Amino acid sequence: MARERLYLFDTTLRDGAQTNGVDFTLADKLAISRMLDDLGIDYVEAGYPGANPIDTAFFAEKRSAHAKITAFGMTRRPGRSASNDPGLAALLAAEADAICFVAKSWDYHVRVALETTDEENLASIRDSVRAAKAIGREVLLDCEHFFDGYKANPAYALACAKAAYDEGARWVVLCDTNGGTLPHEVGKIVGEICEQIPGDHVGIHAHNDTEQAVANTFAAVRAGARQIQGTLNGLGERCGNANLVSIIPTLKLKPDFSEKFDIGVSDEALGHIARVSHALDDLLNRAADRHAPYVGESAFATKAGIHASAIMKEPKTYEHVAPELVGNKRKLLVSDQSGRSNLLVELDRIGFAVDKDDPRLSRLLDEVKEREAIGYAYEAADASFELLARRLLGKVPRYFEVEKFDVNVEQRVNAKGERVTVSQAVVKVKVGDELLISAGEGNGPVNALDVALRKDLGKYQGYITGLELTDYRVRILNAGTEAVTRVLIESEDETGDRWTTIGVSPNIIDASFQALMDSIVYKLLKSGAPA
Ligand SMILES: [Zn+2]
Image (cartoon, rainbow, N blue to C red; front, top):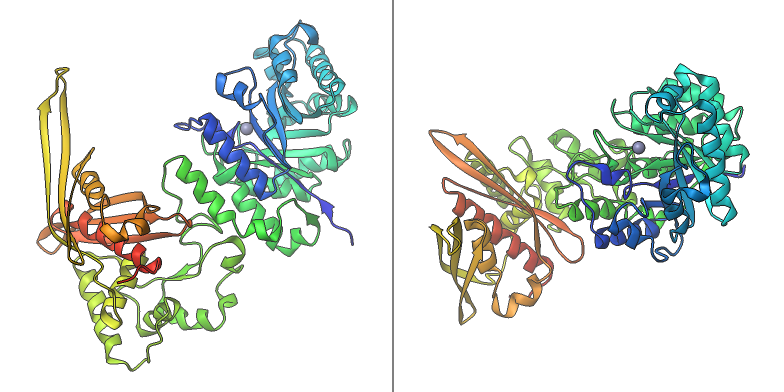
């Protein structure tokens, strides 16, 4: 049976940009639209031309190779003609392949928010669709508050959707703007609409206010809708939009969908989706969600010792899909609960063949347990675990030695009379026979230490230029009688690989230093730097 085409519409740059604390620059927008284009998204909704300088600049030229760049805006204002509405004019002037109009479809909103009549609202929809079609744009209509509107007055909500469809709109998109509709309601209502408007002209736009945006999306698809709107990582105001990073793998990997539908995302592109998801978080300068389905660091992580050997023998028994398909990795957690089999499997994964009776294995297990008792948490710090294992079982070259470091925090009044705190660090490093001294300044002592440490590593400098610290987490633990500080540092390099290192000490600078050192040494090791 021929598969039906399902279309993906991304609104990270429009609805996602409504998120509290998110402020995309033009460069951000261009980078994200390029990623979406490469991923195989059909429509990229990029913002409101004419509404602000960034969006206007974005829509000043053609921005994609394949995806249809979509401009978003209101239908003509009530009481005006289409040719006499500056907002509509900006929308029509945008360098866009498609225009997505938003219109009220709940009669209550038409009266209260728009302060106009039901009939004038329908006329505004028809006029706007006609104006955009006349200049050759593909047209979409976002029916705002569609599900609430349909529950209150089904005939009017349907009339809004029909007005756009009959006028030639390619898509009528049913929006659950408040995000409060439940999957069984979405299924029922979308089913009823698809009896009036062919499903291959119907889209779904779901919000996550009951944490069912993804479920609502699939309910709509099963009921006949053939366009899915969503955002990367579910970005969006309040609780977010439907998460395309969860939806795409499900469409591609679950037979209920993959046997019925084709989407524009290739198998190869699917293999990059974890990286796309992380790249968005990097742009937003926030840590990736470890527990994100498919792409999170923990999505394929198992802790229990009894499962470890079974997983290696037959991964399928414990994994709903293969992690490689979405660019993720299987992970076995090493923790104080772990037994030998877990440890063996983890060693095997990092390239050590150790016999299960090897006495070094007991030493490593003891060492892990001892360290975990004083606050280390190796299950959260894969790279530090690997270094520990290599040091004990194999060899980690002594690339360099920090002979001494000095960190200094000073609070003073600057020339403008403001009270400022400045941190400086000086690091003395020995690389071979070379003694290097570097100083760094930072917004805090750890930052200053990091800057100084990575400023000059002599012959190794070239290996660490792509190294970036992406997250820094501190926790105070009560181990025994004394409080100790645990620092976890997440790093990333130019290849997109990520790893986490750990440091524990009563002193936060010392704990941070351990984690920084592990990160650098790990990077040198993985880059094959010569000893
Ligand atoms: Zn929305």
